[in-house]
Image 1: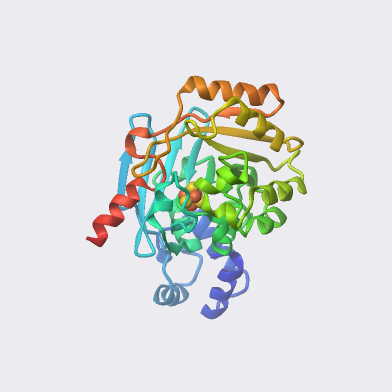
Image 2: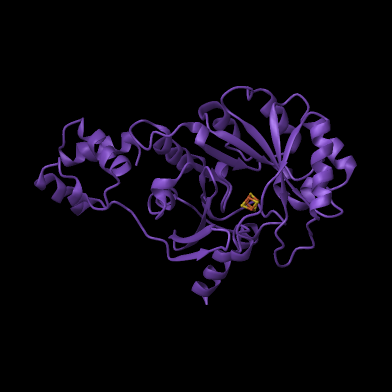
Length: 333
Ligand code: SF4
């Protein structure tokens, strides 16, 4: 709940106005696991709260550990399962959270897209992936790059972003959070209202190619989204990156690299080149490291900062959606 929602709860409970902040403090700073633990609230009011509300923490249903230390958690949500991936490295610990059960966008290269859409996660279900994480205290960064299109569930994602960044909640700098999108309808609102970093899933250099792997290009054309991005300032606090999965014989040639550099000209950004994790029932294939390095070098020579993202957790189905697809199938059968 946001502070405003907690103020409504306080008022229903007959608590003073300042109690909303006390509740937020117990929830997001002290991270209590029961209402009984909120010891500066009178016993009678705690009883009332327990009768009407719950903390809303649900532990993961499954955990899988990679040999490289990456942990994949499967959380129950909206009658199904979603994935959350904890990625520790030398100087940071990043959590990749989901925002929907399934996804409407049907990207050809994505297992979540193949699941179809089941439900938007509530802010509670988004926050639960963070707060019920055994490694919660060690987190340094959060990326909304798990299952679902975050800006197709803007209201609930925005509530979670507020709780994470406002002083009454986690109080994190927005610079520690990245929202990844294909450029869905909530993008303008995100650009206007949020200071969190933005990652745009591009994966092609022209609309014809993009629509063949990302049907949502029809509704959210890449040229519109690039033009929109150009209207905002990304040269200071907030950063924008473009995600580009390199597919064999599809978008991997030097000509594609040159086209991408031309497309992003004038935008202070970074390109993350991503190796494709093979998934069932898709004709797409990845490329070798040499090809990715060539692609990166062409971008860098043209003044576009490009890096190759290190693959993590390949041995535990880290490609988003694979584990939950298996688990959701078991649940249905
Ligand atoms: S890549 Fe993202 S937007 Fe596309 S189907 Fe998968 S989860 Fe949805």
